[in-house]
Image (cartoon, rainbow, N blue to C red; front, side):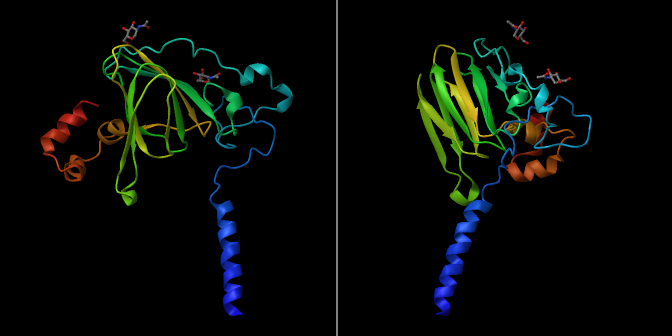
Amino acid sequence: MKSAYFLVAFALLAFASSFVSAYDPSPLQDFCVAINDTKNGVFVNGKFCKDPKHVVAQDFFFSGFDKPGNTSNALGSAVTPASVEQLLGLNTLGVSLARVDYAPKGGLNPPHTHPRGTEILLVQEGTLYVGFVSSDSDGNRFFTKVLNKGDIFVFPIGMIHFQLNIGETPAVAIAAFSSQNPGTIVIANAVFGSNPRINPDVLTKAFMLDKNVIKYLQSHF
Ligand SMILES: *[C@@H]1O[C@H](CO)[C@@H](O)[C@H](O)[C@H]1NC(C)=O
Ligand SMILES: *[C@@H]1O[C@H](CO)[C@@H](O)[C@H](O)[C@H]1NC(C)=O
């Protein structure tokens, strides 16, 4: 009898935990168009909501993904985001997009992670070498593919990932995110380019490199 109760309790707990793991809150209303004011201290899902009476079609509109980003930079890539900062109507809705351009022969969207969103990437033009690395508990496995026009790859939330143009022509991809504000942490910028800098002793030990190499890397970010 006791074990039957235990089983029922266990089943209920397992059932309940499937709700507990859903951390993205419901919008609670049809929409919550952000007002562009970060000076005040109160936020709903990151932004104030505009009075619904004043919401217009323009709040749900963004234009510009027809234009290539400028890839004349050290990495040879450019991200054009359409997240809640650019498209205020996305607030609370849990989706956003980005256009990513890659220069021919080596344009790189460097190793980075989106702390708040899974990414699904569609290649529109070109050939990309992409991949992500799973967490320590999964053995830091590297999942990688070469993608061509029309191919799609998923980068699960929080995983460190990258895309490299290995083709002779410019590449273009559209990324969709399961967040209106997925966030981006570029690993090299965060580790070697933080403000202020991390004490080199920490990075020397963490990366098992000579301190001069760490200082060199820090001076380059
Ligand atoms: C692209 O960026 C480079 C470097 O910042 C700049 O010199 C160039 O004028 C830009 N090109 C366009 C078309 O904006
Ligand atoms: C929001 O405000 C910032 C800073 O004032 C501005 O750069 C940005 O273009 C604004 N975004 C929209 C969608 O109005």
